[in-house]
Length: 195
Image 1 (cartoon, rainbow, N blue to C red):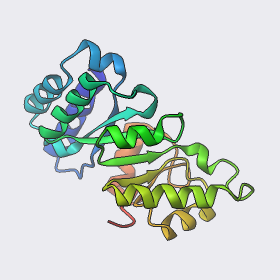
Image 2 (cartoon, rainbow, N blue to C red):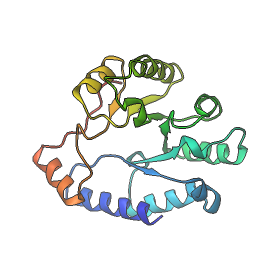
Image 3 (cartoon, rainbow, N blue to C red):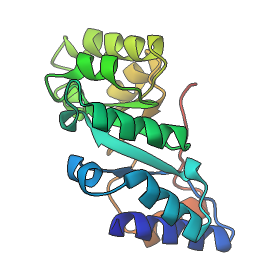
Image 4 (cartoon, one colour):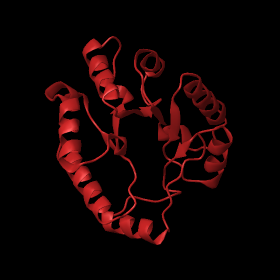
């Protein structure tokens, strides 16, 4: 909750200064869902800082989701009903991927960066990524690929319709002050490729 508080405070501060703001994704663990009424906590923080719910994306990792967890399904559905965007993080990193897609509803699938490991050498990566992006589209999910480090991976992912990309090709982790300066100077661009 401390991270959520900082994010909301920083968004409010930027908006009050007239700066451009972008949605922020925050990862929540199974423990967060078990110990808190996460939807109420999110709502409270959004209201306290006057932040639109569209500026916060709730990320949960594939590994925290199991089959038939009715309580967790209800909590995720509650967040969705309250207007939060749900993101499935690290898709493909575990063994339950397809069951997770069947049992839960997410707005965005973040494709695990390991699919791009040794991208140019492993010829299986391309058909697998093509299938994942196609499957996500068929079930109404947008896609984001993690770990994009080369122009080759960028061009390929763009060609198969992956809507968003993240990775060192675009920027490495940086201080907030550096990010604000890059956005202000127009040297840091956030864009959607398609959809």
